[in-house]
Image (cartoon, rainbow, N blue to C red; front, top):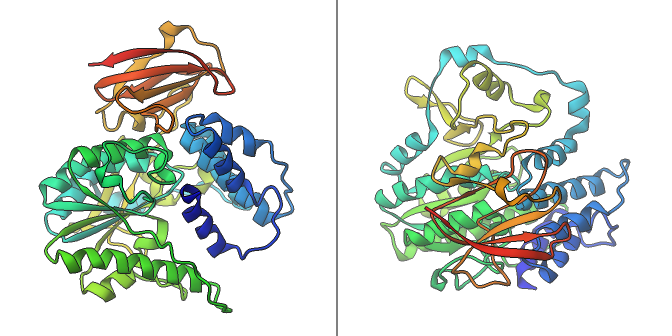
Length: 418
């Protein structure tokens, strides 16, 4: 049960314990299903898509939508991820219009974000990068930079979702590694960190928040303080260490508009070190373009970017509130094609499935051949459709498994990617 406990604990921070309906229990339903069928990524999606929702019950509907976008991200269906994510904001979809900030484009130059961030790595002791948990391309963006971080002297990689205390003794991640690490690109990021000999750090707060208070942000603040204490402990034992922190959303913010004091704020207070904070979660595409930020819309329309960028003015990076730099991502959704981020900046090779003559609805998973079956995280996977059917894989030996629409094995083969 440990595998689901941390995420359920976080949900309890947001929603006090009380009787919940099926939609409010969407995450538990999905996690219970995946515990029974850890390699069947279709099963939790089917389980929660069958839950009836009430459009007038906003909180329940919002939880269900978050569960759907999360488990579709695990499955690798990017369009469905954006669909369920955006439908949390139906009022804005119906009332907003697409906006472009053309002045922003004229006043800034745009540089490759990975090069800029790794240049900063040589100048900083602590860098904090955030992600949106439902967007796998954030992991695809960070993965190629890990080698440059290591060359710059970083030896510790702290990852919020890690749960397995034995992760540094393992040869590869598996179902017990964490919650979001079950997403294939997150699994690949962990494998790359292991290959480079980073020491992986679990800093999630496991302590329960039992204080009764009217402050709605108390438990969130408590959680962030515990996370900061654990991160500060690394530098207490190794004062000259360089630390890369990978967190979710606002934990890296160096300020707050509410009483929710964030992890980065506590960290600076505890250590005296001002972390360099990099925002990935704001300037990303939406299925409904009227939800796009005006800077994102303008940069993609007029600069036609194909890689993530940072906007510079007088050599200073543009950024959102409470961070040091904000990354602007390209548009990845192309009709009939798998999103290009799956190639991980061209490091993974295109592997067509056309010669297998598979049927629509069948499920294909590629597992590393040296990883023990039962609790593996796929390197890549795909539900066969009438669009582009391919996988993206690093060089290596894989077990290619063909399954039916229920996730039951039909056949498997060994493939070598060279």
